[in-house]
Image (cartoon, rainbow, N blue to C red; front, side):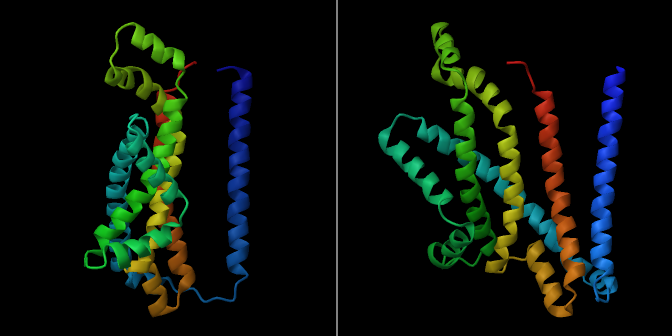
Length: 251
């Protein structure tokens, strides 16, 4: 390692430590200046419902992640199918979902479309999946469109079929380019699952609000809520950084 690289690494570590110290100092000053009596024992007594809510959030988010990715791929393929009716249907769906708030969609699905259903969890998963799928479809479409037309023409010239072009030419390049966007949307999906509390699904946010309602200890519960979501979103972010470095190539 060169001297410049070592100096740069040391400087980056120093800056990171300074930022961490500043953040810790800010929160320490903010919390110590509050006239608030901390009671972490009440939070510990309520640990079981909170843990169950956190695990339930993992379950809902995981299922919604898988469904939304599959649905997003189908939507982008539908938009590129060349069938006018299918293209219009997929495009209209994407614009409708992206143009309306998720909270409104959750309420409509629970109280209108699936009004007769008693399975709120299934309704919540469907709402999250449909919402994220529209954004993922646009991310996928942007990645596919970023592949140079000359590469597609070259693949056709050597006899590749349409499925082979997607499999060997378009998808490998597009996936490298859309990883940051996918990561951001997946993180948003995990955080958006907190809105499911409005239809009484017992996920992490709902259990934390119930704790606050029964104990009036909001700071303890909401601090734990923030850390709980960080534990879910940070692995997704760092996994994406790892994949970006692994699949990085010189264009």
